Length: 213
Length: 124
Image 1 (cartoon, rainbow over the protein chains, first blue to last red):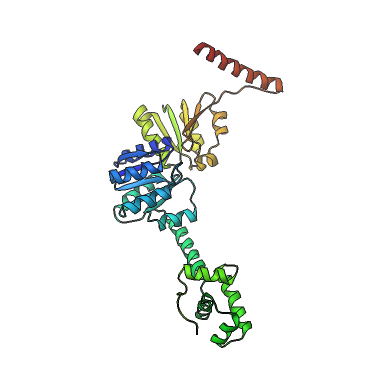
Image 2: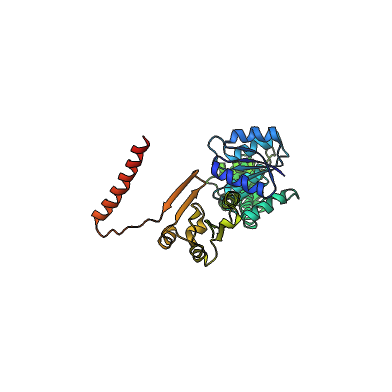
């Protein structure tokens, strides 16, 4: 397996490269900056690119995005000093093949790199658990677990209907409309009906262009 | 006898250092002690190494084997704290002197400063 290592801390990078080579892996390049990581990855085409999350010129995440944009098959694993759920989601969203702590046990680390050859993700079970939780939370935030009635009402809000019009369309009282709107705002974690409408359009909860009633 | 002991939680960086040390000094000269074991400090003490290496960023080491305990119980050892997040190695000597009064502290500091300035003059 041929690897490219990108980390601005030369001492860590050197230690990592020494470990990788002792494990029989081939380090074909080492760089200390994000831009250099992108350039080297595209020029050398390694099997795996190990990239530090924090680099002074370009974050590991941005380097990952640029590498994947130019070379969609690239296998990029992000290394981090401190794991973070938002960062983890961003890495997965950007097409990263792994997200590993720099304090990870070396044996486990090498095993996970070999796992990439079998199509596995380079991620500990704990991180996978956190990823699932984070995804589930994001999904809840996105859809808000709205009822069919609430989605229907939200569509009318997006269309710009007043509460009175909505009440007529749905054949309920205005108070019931207000009650539903209050629930929708809570579930979507937004402040007002405008934010709710914007959110609904952005995440595809409702389609625009439909006519009310 | 091991010349170098390295306290490790077998992390990526320390394992790389261990490979480098073994290449330089030979495998027999490098004692690797898993810091997560209850008797890790005792194992280092029993080996009586000339130097001990620790990863300053490894939380396991900080938790299980504090630096103070090492330098108190190994009077002649040099402790090397490696910091891969700062590209730095700090050498901590275990030299200890009695200091019951502030004047003792000033005397010790003064002695170290004078020794350093003497070295600087010699190298000028």
